[in-house]
Image (tube, rainbow, N blue to C red; front, side):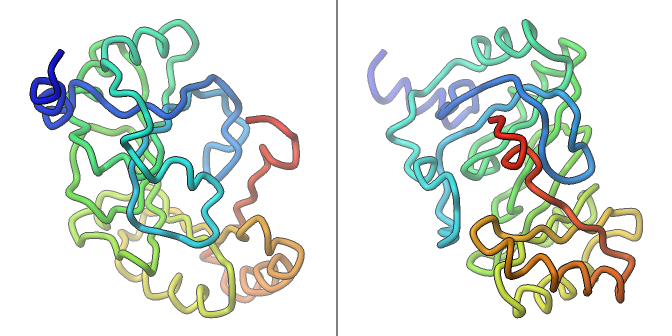
Length: 210
């Protein structure tokens, strides 16, 4: 396949830069504790300094992979898939979500919302970042708002973002892992004073699972 044909298939969403895929227990947010197949796509320019998967940022180092092959591996393991990154909405998500739907698979996404919305999703976890704010179109679609808290200023940002989502959207505050011991008491106190929020933890890291 020449590079022009490959790029055309990438643009159409028929090939995606696959960093990794694996079957595990979801560790964060509303669905924590549930088994799911994770698809981590390469490519992200949001640039969070605390990102724990910086190797996902450059899509060129991750092989363009057929969505047929990706979905085949999902079907062998689970009826629920989580597509994350990187930033998955950098790519056209409509073809892969259509194929997953055809195979009766529940589809979740974890996204910063900073790119044009595409795809058909059963659950949308929106995790806004100050470096590159979400596009307005995604706020009304979000099922879950997950705010990563690194410092006190992030709590102010979380409140601003919470006013943009629908009233049915679940609200979570999650400590940034490297600051968890310092920031966790602050989050606990904040949630007790503002009970519209819930605490989210990266339980998979405590359990030492992928």
